[in-house]
Image (tube, rainbow, N blue to C red):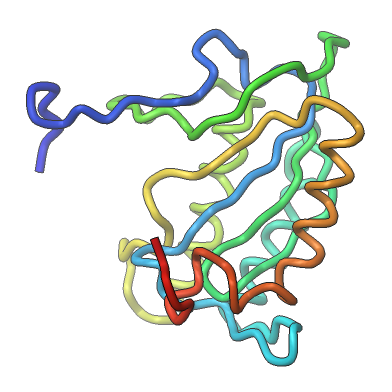
Length: 185
């Protein structure tokens, strides 16, 4: 279905005038297509990755080798999503101040180079290509169309988000992305 502004009233809640290629730390969550439990399972509070989960893990780590402008912090691959902290590093020397939101809903696929959107698009494409090669399903979606991001504003927030990411497998039973969770909203 083509985008029709009269029917589709989706608006980005991303910070309108924030430059996402700007130096700072960003908390990112990327969810699998249809929330499919593609990457593994949580057993006794620990994630056990499938072959596809291992691809998601390896490609995340490889991103820092491919892109000079990013530095990766803690991350976790969950059964149907990933969480991670990405630092965009540049010459602007201005730290993140901010807001939170979702990636913009654009009709155009253009993303500013050396930006958070460019990083996420590259990561998602690399993972999807490898998984689809194994499954023999070229072009099949692996990821939801969008992703969640949050600009990390200070050290206290950074530490809280790091803890959230590292403890995420232990809290899978209560996770909103868990399709088996009782009382999902």
